[in-house]
Length: 214
Image (tube, rainbow, N blue to C red):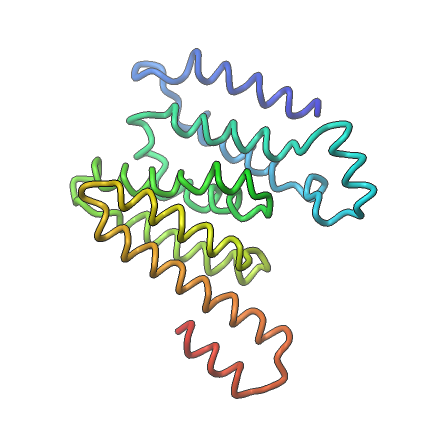
């Protein structure tokens, strides 16, 4: 809790003194995001790993601090405005870590950042695509699922939110929809593969899952 208060102090200082065009400090903002993500994903805050009694006790006394810091990360990202392009693709992995935390409200609040990154790269890169973002998300998703993160609920929510946002956009509706379905399908195959490697005795099933991922 003390640490969270300190991070909140940093957010107000960054917004007041290091955000406008003349005084923007890329390294400071970068450090802030990495610090906030490290705090949010710290093992001592992963409430679902505790017994129900311990979880209730922590929530009653402190609330779920992951949500508080996660909403702050979201707000700070949107505050960046035209500076956002400087954080793509480097921030894709850290934001992915945040969205994979199994807390529904946190996921709903942070997954739309992915669409914002797509839109930002599409508008500001000069290439009229979001290839840097796309490649980075697919690479990092592979690593995170292999590391044990991700679940069926995440897959459903990721596809739903990306499709909703893309379909409202004049230029991103077609390529965005293709991308959302591709990521959803990849995630499904990765989750199947992980399950088969961990639990399935059948060599044929394991091979089939491997072929699907490839």
